[in-house]
Length: 318
Image (cartoon, rainbow, N blue to C red; front, side, top):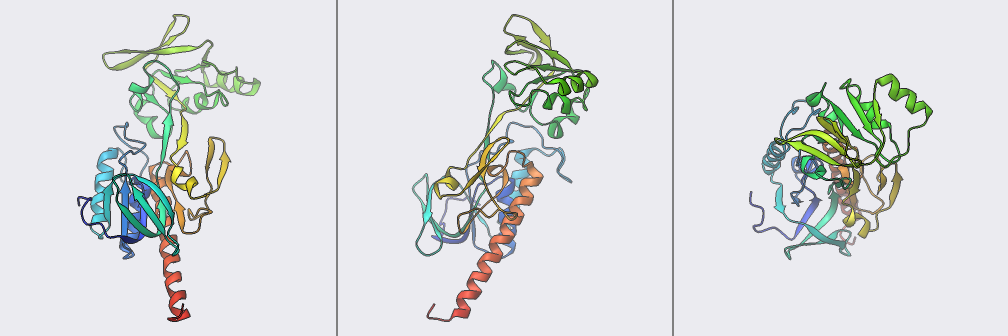
């Protein structure tokens, strides 16, 4: 459905974000006969990847095809979807929320589910961004099988220099760890790296060598080039949680920075607001994000149901 036409003023639920978590939430809500609007900025985290892996029955499917299938499914249950960005949300004084969209539209929601995801901030190295999701990767569970037995490089994380190199050694016997600006691993990790056959290269990395549209090496600041076919990098995950924090949602510290705190259903500290997907955690893969959206939607539906029943039981004066 084109989603810019005749949007009603008020919905049971507005889902902010149209990725796996948001579409999963919308599917559950549509099937529960809830009037639902999905506001989709169209910026999924996994857009650079050609395929997604590890999602049972969807292994190898392209992220774009996955989203298109989800959009068709929610439309079949009467869920509306609009492309846009929610720029502000505030309590409406009646237990719900008033939302402003970037194009000037205004909508109201009795409950909110925020699934706005995160942004991966990559190290500033020459050539890195252009190869992201192709032969510059971050997750061996997502991509390890597809690049197995190739020549791996790993750019050390400043706080956990050995961790990713040890992990990816399960997918290749040819792994080189580039310490770059990280300190040398401690004794225990150094022993593990040696046991895994990982080569450790000291010195700063200057950039990548790309030939015929493929990674062929890592260029060091001192002029050396180390031949490599794949480079694993740990990006800095930055949640798109501005809407949540503006509403007053509490955050909690994680090993990957501060994320909005939620309970087991995705409920935030703000009454009437739930969140799911990468907006609340750096390691929510597609299958996990979809599961989180499902849980949040079921909780929201139950919350609305009991709220309506309690109001009815209180009688007309309430």
